[in-house]
Image 1 (tube, rainbow, N blue to C red):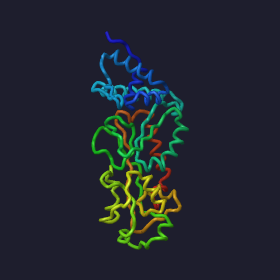
Image 2: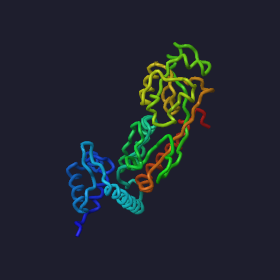
Image 3: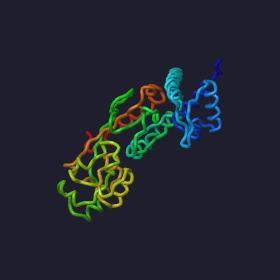
Image 4: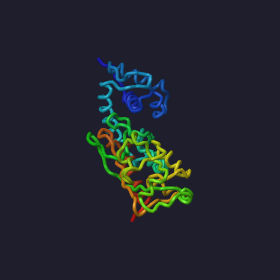
Amino acid sequence: MATPFSWNDLQYFLAVARTGQLSSAARSLRTSHVTVSRHIEQLEFSLKTKLFERNPRGYVLTAIGRRLVDTVERIEAEAERLQSDISDSGSQLRGVVRLSAPEGISNFFFVDKLNEFAETHPHIMVELLTIQQIMALSRKEADVAITLDPPKAGPYVSEKIIDYTLHIYATRDYIAKHPPITKREDLLAHFFIGYIQDLVFSPGLDYMRDVLPGLRPNFQSTSISAQLKATLGNRGLCVLPYFIAQQFPELEMILPDEIELKRGYWLTSHNDVASAPRVRSLMDFISTALRKNLDKFYKDFQ
């Protein structure tokens, strides 16, 4: 006869499955890592099976553990829907939502906007990941992802949430001290700032060929923040999203009537978690926040 386990044990299991670390799971649940470990051991004892492999990097799900994640997430989604149905407002929603998004839109748009989300959903903790490679939804490393490309295939809910424009910028000081730029070919005579070509994680970030064939960045970085800082330091020219550059009045657009690149952002979630009210609430907030700020993403917004 199997030893009974509680829904509490499953919540601890899910937190460790999502973070891969006892300490991270403990922070999200506002408890100690000792308590988390005890619940995991209790659940494994009850089910008489190992759910995680322990290694120096953390907790890795076993095959049985991965199957259990899918089941527990469905239970969690149903519990959240019930909670949402009987609650007078979404402010009663609880839990952690991990959002993976590119560095640019994370640092220069969502960091501020997520304060508004926290005000209306004080019990939902948003973990914002801004690492270069987008976390894999297929492995449940993130609940929601904002990407430059839609998923090629898989059990995902995905929608294009916004288009945005990019332009070439330099500081007014740089422009005043260097040869004038009146046509694309003049760009070749200037110092250029951009991504490391062989580490670009999305084709959408490979700007150089769209600007001018043969153009190569002299200073290269995987970080848009580092590129921006180099540009603000009068180092040279850089392709920047309009929604970032327009926050810095010292930047001036180069060849504004001739060079404009267009890209888009996609919002994606795994089918297993997309309908969970805490996840859906964040996805709806993201879409609404972008719709309210379309003028910040287009040079010639009408």
